[in-house]
Image (cartoon, rainbow, N blue to C red; front, side, top):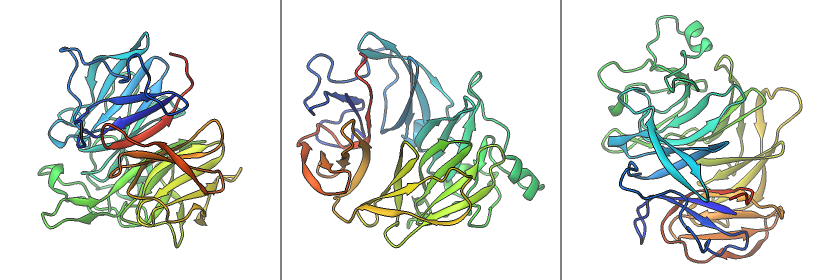
Length: 328
């Protein structure tokens, strides 16, 4: 089955996750994954989510109420449990985009308005210690609690009076500010794989690779078609990259040895996407790409050839698209 997180900014104003059958038809019973009981904290701009057993963690990206929402499985839906890692408790948690479960049990969250990737401890849902590499390289530096990957520009509007230290690129993530001084292009999708954190540095036109244990930058993936990367997905040992700047999807085959230096990705779908957002690879090996403005899902072959429109009309603007085993 397919899960699609909705931004709540489209035709229907849905703040939920839609559920579709493998053939693209809406699930007849409970077409929405999350319960809408009065006790549930309202989502506002749902972004990335991580399924951990019977627990679902969702990035709530509304700037005034940024947090990770926790839901638990109940039959064929998920019921709200509690709010975790609010901005008041985790200062870096402003406008979160993606959330990933690491091999170490920690949750990793990319936060657009502080332009950081932070680590959250699994038992307490409090920030992990600041990355060892940042502490060693910048012994007098000021970093938000939990920071694993820092920004090249720390004095951003949402970080408060005690602005974090700048970390020069390429170690620090780049950021492009709008006319009001707020991030227009900043950190986006993340993937944790075999001890490394892969980070979509949207403003830097690169995917950067960091050691999870230390936070040290070890490699960068760049290329002519790799501009404004947003979403990342892992399929086997291939990292797939949504390059929104060129409307393309790229692939990078992760080597058996630890990646190092400057690396290049190969083009799979070349400039055929209209405002792409989330994408996934189905059980048939095809690419399924959600288009935000058209509110639909397109299907492409594994070689990047357009096949058809898989879901012609989504009720709201899609953000993340995931295929999950039909166990509900």
